[in-house]
Image 1: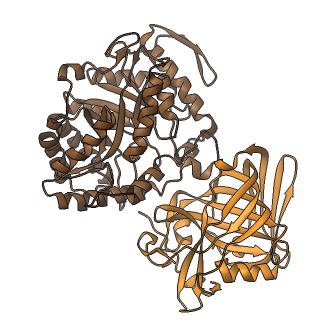
Image 2: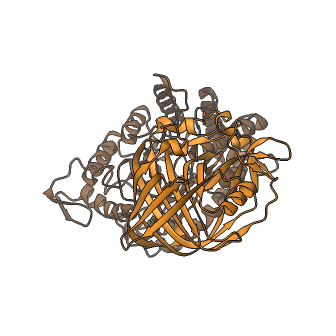
Image 3: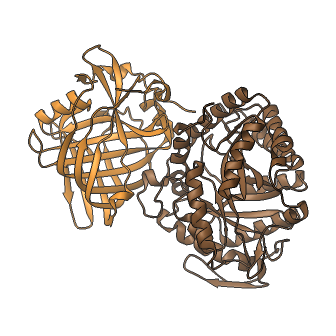
Length: 248
Length: 376
């Protein structure tokens, strides 16, 4: 079996500090969630995953934009790029970066769930036959452009979202761990469409030029309630997740 | 009760020039031993691109070799992928007929549609369409096998009148099966008068529930072929050894590793939301079984791992539930040394098979179908 070969030290400095694993769930209502997915070349996937994770067959990336019109910190949006792999038996994704347009929300997302936040702005432009995604960094530079094309209604039960693995440093003991963040979703409307990645600034995402898009898969768009969860599982980023995952 | 071996042909890394050759040679030797000791079926999957998990992309060639090395055991496609991007229906009819001739009428034709994004995406097949294409294939195949000349105008494919040759050796045609993983596929099988080939490693209670639905529906089937195959087969793992503890330790490790490998593959359900794939295929079943309830010795429920006595007890439960046959994965990821796999098969033949009611060999060799309107 193949395992990730990423040197954790390369990304350790950017790992958010987390105040233990006791955060309470948070419900974010009336959210919009867009996912655009594409297979990537297997030649780069191993080097982007920590040794605890395995690349999926085939490897693929997801761009996920979430727009939250209401939250305890006011409206905010997030724009992420993630690489889907496996943690033991489970599909799990490494999040490269989460651009957030609300500093209070960003601080809380990092402190409570370990999101690798960066200041920026993610926008969805809803058209009749497509949804356009734009993610910009804090200087307004475009870091990702993508589209979902030919919108078509489907059932929420057809969607399977992949949970994230965030590298964090636990403030209490200083240890680096991967925390699993697996939100719940309550759907009110779901669509799918063709995936179209237009532009990825790999330097901005820290993917070292290793993401080579090969085969678009599909996009989904949902209007839903997103419930950011309690943290339930963590694992050692350098050890096989099958053996090192523990419940907290 | 019949028993079969089921080949995935896993090839673990690191790969050398000989890795695949050794796996194929070992599998052929296992098939020969299974034939000698009384197994009834040797099934082979059709998978593409599934690194390490299965390197069995041309099962018709492998099964031909199995047929050449054996005398009695029936050879089974478990399954032929009935999706046009994988294989044209005419080619499926032709190559299965050839295999039936070369095996002396020992072919079983399992049908299915693939459940992984890795494979469907690789062939650029549309996951929304596979159930429909499968349905069209299984309605056409028996006619292509039995009619002197055949023409067809359908939704997925068409052909002008031609003689599709050769014809299968078995008359009217080989028994047909459907791979059952997604919920409701057992009903599709029953409604069409086809056998239900369980391939999902589901625990016994789950498979038992599917069996009941199957039995209920097949009474009113509208058969696609000229015979009804009303058999239900389940799938689990087998590792038999004189030493119960040794068997449990190594058999369970094989089972877990296979499950882990299976879960690396991107299933259709994971990547491509569609009503056509309401479940994630076999993977959750493997995971659930690996993490599910075990007996006091740690053997997952329904899995044939242990000494012959333990395995007889396990298989009696499958028999009591009403299954007609159980197929076994006897090797995974080459975790069990070949000599131990062969020993496992021999022990099974000597100490387990005699505990179960058997059809007479002549009946088994003649196939198992019931003619439409006929009586078994």
